[in-house]
Every structure is written in C-alpha cells, then in structure tokens.
Image (cartoon, rainbow, N blue to C red; front, side, top):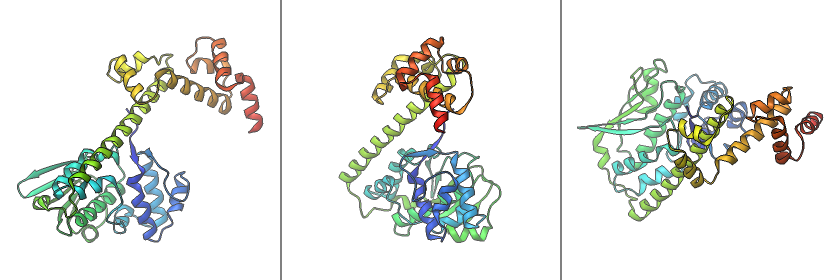
Length: 332
C-alpha cells in the first residue's frame, strides 16, 4: 500500500491560523522535525498529521485545536483550486472543476458532490483514522472559502464527522454557523443546492482554460512522483527476498513491464537507476549505522557475490566498503 501524502499548500493556512491565534508556529514545526520559518515546498507524509496536530494542540493549550484554528483561518489561501472557482461561470461550475484536481491538496481527499433536490452534499472522502482536528479545521476552511466565493450566499445546513467525540454543540455552531453531527459515518458538508447557480463576478473563460491547463500539469507531476515513489517502495520490499526486477515490480503494479518502462521514461527516470540508487543508499546506511558484516550487507542489497558488491560500491562512492565504513565512523 502506497504512502499517502499531503501538499504543503493544505497546511500553510494552518500555519497562518496558528500565528493569528497567538501561537508561534515555529514551535510546532520544530516539534515535528521541520525547520522553523514555514513549511518546505512539496508534499509530506499524511501520517505526520497526527504528530503535527498533537504538537499544535499542546502549543495552543487547546483540546479542540482544529476547531479553534478554523476560527482564525483566512478566507483565501492563494491556491490554484480557488482560481478555478473564481474564473468559472457559476459557483457550482467552479466546485465541479476544483473537485477534479483535489488530489493536488491531499491523497486523502477523494471528494465528490451529490445533489438531491434542494440539498447538496460535499463528501470529503477522508478515512476514519484521520486525526479529528484535521477534518474539523478543513470544514471551517471550506465554509469560509465558500462564503467568500458566493459573497455570503453560501449557508451550510450541517457538518458531518465520523468521529464520535469532540467539542460542544454550541462551539461547533459558533464556528461553522450550523450544527455538527458526530458519528455520522462520513465526513461531509450539507448545504442548500440553490447556491450552486450563483454567478461568479470574476468569470473568465480564457483564465479558466489557463487555470485548468496548469492544474492538469500539476496533477501529472503528482502522479509522476507517485509512480516513482511506489517503484522505490517495491524495490525496497522485493530486495529483501533477493528480487526487484522490472518484471516483478510491474506485476505488483498490475501493468505490463513495457508499460512500466514507458511510464518511468515519461517520468524522466530509468528502472535500473532506481535500483542502483536504492542499493547505494542502503549500503551506505548499513555500513555507517550498523555493525553488520559485509557478507550480510551484500545479501541485503541484492548482490549474489561479495566481489560484485565491492566493484559496484567502489564505482558508486570511489572507496571500498571497508574504507567507507572506517572513514565514516572516524568522522562520526
């Protein structure tokens, strides 16, 4: 199973909200192993969410930190998905455009829109195991954004959460402007469907095409990185059993080897280079961070003979494994 990731753009508004609430965001970032001064570019493991929200709750001194920060979020965050809304003809058109590219924000947001009569439901598609602070913050961010996009016409009817315990009903109502249902079996936002026809004052077909083109390119880049990450993970897994051929990895990805080779070429990498890179990094780690015998390292890096491993390592690093280990531990 591949590791889920979030884009840092999803968390930057939270950093702004921490600051607006009087909490130093650098203290939170340092506690989760990130440098102070803001989030780095790119994507980060979704599994880090639990650690982030735990640190944020403790630094804020706030049990319901997601809900707390939702009240300090800015309406707009400068996200590409917001520009898709603004340049669309109506709010509903913008929402449907944005939902096509929601993975740009997070692998966990498998969002979709359902409309039944006068009621519309935005299903967020989050997993039950996500820390409750994340969806509680996200609901507040969406409500605030939708209100700004529709000039105050967006009125939520209810917010639904899968978790069973949280804040008081009064506090949810104060932040969201509607009731919150706990233990609902889904993460969703219920609102009046009539707002979907709200015209956008910033509608611009040419800008919409430009924004969609940019969104498609960004999504293709996310998928490219996702493929490379999956291949790296499978290489690590298969090398334990002495395998990790192109055919084996392709089989695990349920695609023909030729197709995998083509997709990696489009991604700008070669399978053999990924194998070499992983073997080299693993060998270095084992030599510097363990006292494993060279024969064991040879086996764990997928080589059949010590002599082959020695030649490959000398080619990669410019030193023999013994020289590299001796120098590295001396410097340490």
